Length: 570
Image (tube, rainbow, N blue to C red; front, side, top):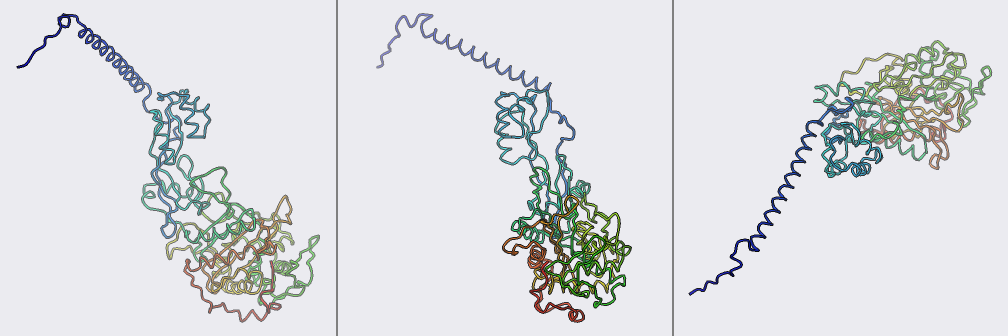
């Protein structure tokens, strides 16, 4: 049996405490709903206004649009050099910003330090409808910008250019401008092709080999650092096609991160007096023109040569103070004998030879902004003599490399190229030396490395032939006797030449390894030796210590080189 307890009489009366509490709660809920509705209405109105008055618009500057996609660049073996990848760019629409602008300006200044906080605040309060914050932004910056949570900030997908080899071949590849067009190097040369539909689908192969390029860059960089040189340059050139297997100019740059002025390409944009590297060219000209008909042709180097008010000397360490034949003239690098030989050749034939080698034109290569040589305005007798040993005429190192290719390949000059050439498609070229003269010069260049100034350029088994050149740096209308340009131009294997290798150092400073000397024999020649040793097999040349070029008809002419280690020091 249950007992029902009735409520007190006052609780059953209308208008009691319980009903009062319910009424108060009801009123509060109504008021809260009204406030919430008003807030929602304000947001909707604000969004509506933004939608009507600030619809997405293109950038104020039409040229500031997204980059176009472009095709890839690869090396001769298909290794990627420049690729198009998906990237992010970050922009802001100042008239769509809904957050605290002063606070946002501070955050933007920290994240994108290109502008100050004040500049960002002015931008956010301007009438601008669009501004870039960061083109091709790194992933961490993209994440940080997204975390700001500001609707006025826009993250956009944009094709980005990526150079997977970093600084490698930077001077060859060039870079893109903010519009996505090639601004330098092969990116500029190939711009239209890479932007075309066909170019975007098929990678463009260059002639260089990244393995060979890396070796040449490494050796030149090490030499430049150890010798505290201002710059360095080098090239490896196929003597039968003109293809460039590697081209280096230091200092270089990283095309992924261009900061400040880009260093010039000293292989093609700078001209130098390249000194004694011209002597083999002058000897070849003398043979080709019939001035020299025998390697026993003798030249008086008994004393300095006086020509008007000028005196031509031999380097003190190389001076023989005797009559020299043709091989001895090159082995001992005699300025006097070479000058006398050029005097016999004469101005007309000297100029004709230089013109055939294109020393009067910009270097033949695809790269833009190539330098024009410094060609003598008047060919006096002294000019003919001094240009024969590389003074009074200035060319790019690439000019010299193509000349040496003609010197050893049978006498055919071909333009250098950074584009891969299909087998059998090499240009015919121009016959500038006879095949017989070229064969003789291969012997002369080998003698220089075996017994003369180029001994430190030898690479065992690869049979290197070449010539050193050390010239004072031209400066202020004269010469800086404390600085020089040191060059070694060589070819290998000299009995059946495949490649020219050139290394140049600008203003090296002697160290313990070079016994304080800055001449090419101690600075540039060792670089070539190491490069050939590292790259020969990669380039398809197998070292063979049992082979040698036939020197039997010229070696008996050479005196004073019984001990090869004591001959020459240039």
